[in-house]
Image (cartoon, rainbow, N blue to C red; front, side, top):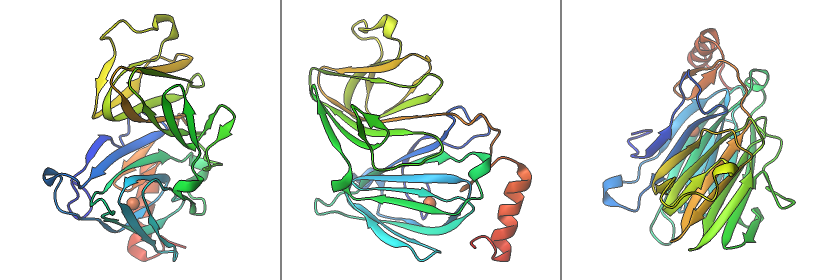
Length: 275
Ligand code: FE2
């Protein structure tokens, strides 16, 4: 439970072990089902030292911050917010025409040298996100490259890949991930077989089968990932370069030292958090 009592699925969360470096958190929120509770939002709260990435599939999030930015993140839109040294913002979900609200928030770390940078937003309308159709796969490219096409979000320290991949029944998807990069797949619809070592592909039937809802962590540092599905699957593919720096997470702050966390708390108390 987060914010003003929002029930959500959190598959990874910020920890000092930093095992998914440069990724810190992945939240999946939906209000389509009674068990997921009434619509509640995330009233004014601070962030420092991270990037928060909101991607909506249905419904919207009304956003407002301490710097005077405001807007609506609608279905298919993405907001890539680089908090840098600090923002205070409010994120309030709204139902779409279908009555549903469905989306994800990813937190990406910032390297030490950029933790106190100026806040920055990249807000991309659904229509500006390229859609690549390829052998039964429909891919929406938020950031990263596929077949010479680049996603609209650029100049992010972690050199991330973030794409929404939908596979039709009886199809396959392969993608080359740079060696040393962290790779994750958040499977939110259907079932697929996920593998990361080309020497063992094609996968033996039944091996690596993943049903939604699951976070796949690719542990092998192979050359590519491969996903096959007999019945169809949809997932967010997430990859990026680790910073290999120590982190100290504290709620909405992720810094490199305890002193920097204490400074964030002092700044918040003294009203000097946002400049
Ligand atoms: Fe936030």
